[in-house]
Length: 227
Image (cartoon, rainbow, N blue to C red; front, side, top):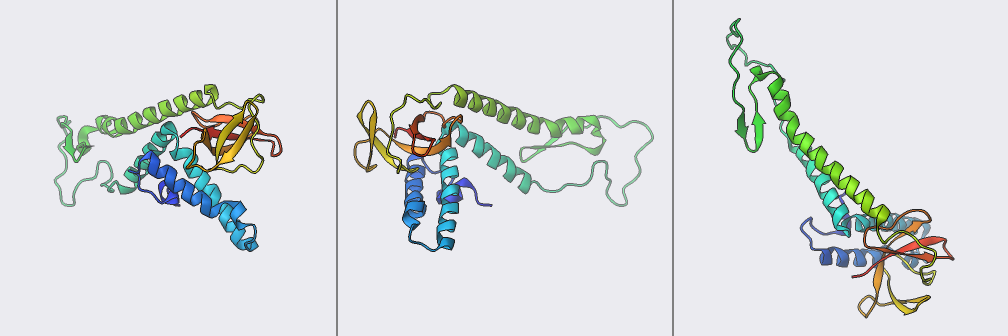
C-alpha cells in the first residue's frame, strides 16, 4: 500500500509548498468533473485515485497530523528492518553448561542504538527491550490526544451562519469573499481567501486551521484553509 507521500508523488522531506503544489496537480488530473465524458471504468478509477489524493492531502497539509503520520511511518519501518535475534536464553551449540550457582548480573551492551542484554539478565532484559516501545507509545498517545482536542475546539467546527459558496466547489478550488454572505470561486494564482482542503458531513469537524462553510445544495461543509 503506497504512503501518502507516494500518493502525491513527493519525498518525505518535501516542503509544505511542494506538497500543496503536488496535491493541486493531482486534483486537476483526477477530479471527477474532468472525467464526465470518460468510460465508466476510467471514471471510477479516477474517483478512487481522487479519494486517495484527498486523504493524503488532509493528513500532510496539517502539521499535527503530518507529524503523527511521520512517527507511524518510522515505527513501521523500524519494525520491518529489525533483525531477528536468537530466542531468549539460547546458548551456542557445544557451549559448556552454566554453573549451578547464580551468575553475576551482566551490564547491557549498546550496539547501533539498541540495548543488547545477556541471556542471563532475566527480567532486566525485558525491561531494557520494552522501554523504547513504551516511549514511542506515550509520544503517539500524547499527539493523538492533542490532535483530537484541537480538532474538537478549533475554528473549523461547522457553523450554519457561515457564508454560502457555489455548489460546484471541489476540493482544491480557491475562493474569494465578495460580500458578507457570498463567495466566488477564483483561480488559485490570483488573490483569494483560501482553498478547500476537504468536504465533511454535518456534525464532523474540519482539519485544524480550516474554516467550515456550509454548502446547502450538497448538505455538506467545505473546509477552507488560507494559504
